[in-house]
Amino acid sequence: QGFDFTGDVTATLHDGESASSKVQPGTYHVTESEPTGWQLTKLTCDDNASSGSTSTGVAEFVVTAGQHVTCTNTKVGSITVVKNTLGGDGSFSYTTSQNLDPSSFSLDTSGGTAQRAYNDLLPGTYTVTEGKAPAGWQFTSLDCGQGGDVSGQTARPPAGMDPGNIRERAR
Image (cartoon, rainbow, N blue to C red; front, top):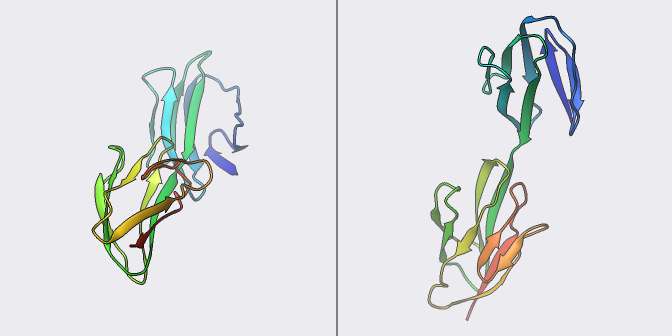
């Protein structure tokens, strides 16, 4: 994935790459074009005279002799909770870790399925727990997808990966 920087200093960087440019002391403006699915989350400088806007991707660097400037961008992820039922439809409750909003929700299946997505998540640890099965239903399996962790009725998917299907069936 390439990241384009334009303005007083230009570069195209790929994942894990960095670039250095020797400049004279002064004020410089650089704009980063965000590829789809990425979010500029931080602009940091070695002094308090520089500033930047993560919403516009424009940074104003007031560079002094020997100063280094660092920009960091992060790919955002998503988690999709998919509820599949066998033998009918129902309403199922869930709670999540505090870093997901809302921290509780219900899924009402129709035609044996329902889902809820959490989008634009920064890398981190997230937890989704299905509540006690309603009367007439029995929890049978949970799949957290690649790279996730399952413990009972709790899924800990990595951000950017779907937790898979949470399946229940009628008794």
